[in-house]
Image (cartoon, rainbow, N blue to C red):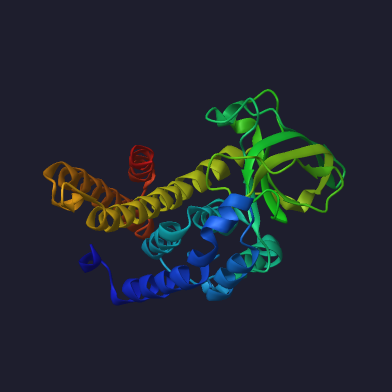
Length: 327
């Protein structure tokens, strides 16, 4: 697949693979066992410029393309999908919507430090009663002078424990469904903002995840992202980009599993020979390779369409679907 990549893509792949194997691999099992957030690792990733891969340089980012972003998330996730999802959320679900909808003041105050690694972001859409049905969310935002007052609960928020900057979807018009939702930039220091405990997950435990409670949380009016009623559009724009990242995360996980399976098949012996010599095992490994390469090509296609400024929703959704099959 490397023949489809430019010299710059291949250099980034080399750099991030070396980083992942040297800096991330030694502590993967320990961090997952203890549900320990990779604070120092994420800090170093920020210093490399990979917390704002697609963000333009003028906005504090690395100014690279979406294919590069897919490569970065895959290579991180090949070693540790927990690190991959932390980086993916900051890039796709936080930096990207700020880049697309943020005012010059919001770009300077929030996007630049997020892309540079000085801040870390989280995306708050899902609620206990509204996940796939994003337009059914019930968190409210009521205008009160030069502030909005947000009330509600957000569930399963990746980076929720460690992040300091949150993009929150809330309803500003109860008479509308999707068009009644607005997006807000919320800091964890605002009155009425509260975190729940870190969720106990079945896997990817080094990435934190929690409930976010907004108890009449007062948010400055200038922190409205876009216009009132733009929230659903902001969310769908972010999720389109996020699907490329999440597909890349699963792809990295699959690539790592494939490599370990091949390695194990060569040292595990039965009936006097490595199990890699048995055709049944070869069939399984061939199927794993086929699915992994197909998923990679599909994700690169979605990323390339994004780079060309074309609509990539369909391709990104297919890449994410194949990610579920790989998982």
